[in-house]
Length: 113
Length: 112
Image 1 (cartoon, rainbow over the protein chains, first blue to last red):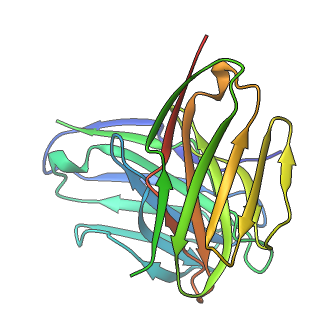
Image 2 (tube, one colour; image 1 turned 90 degrees about the vertical axis):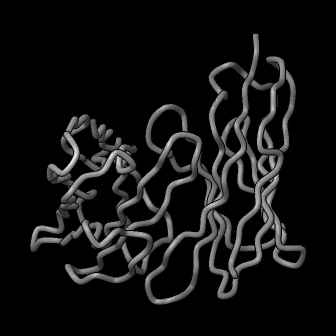
């Protein structure tokens, strides 16, 4: 069965650089969630999109932005990277009106040096 | 403030043991409770519970929800080293954005 695809899987950036993470949801899933997970922490919700519109906003820094495109894939844009942004970034997708279950992608490990 | 509390935070057992993981919640607009297993990668979905008293089972894993006492348990019988992981509990919120409220997880280590 198709799963959530994230790219890249690993990314190394320097402070003050920018990064773009991509997420391709499971086919027919119309809702995408972005999470940030630091070592030993639970996933921290950043932002979500439903039908290409932002549906909820969590602890996403102002330096980050995201959008969902017409093909339902989503991109998380991160600017002025800081050391503290080093984390695992997960994307999850869900099919609205069917279930609360979010299916997670493999994650992008971002390291900021 | 909505919250999900898991206990214990950490557990070490031997292969063959049975473990019970707990998840209690205080969430307005409760919709569902979900269990995920996370090894050194993305969380993988285990169960979604919406009704009290109905056990969900998958192999050696089972889970049940008590909506009166506001908790759920996840049981793992005859544990194996491959069960070693962090088990995350999340509560689905019934608002428009269908967010999940996460617990901190229980870290389970199964020793041979």
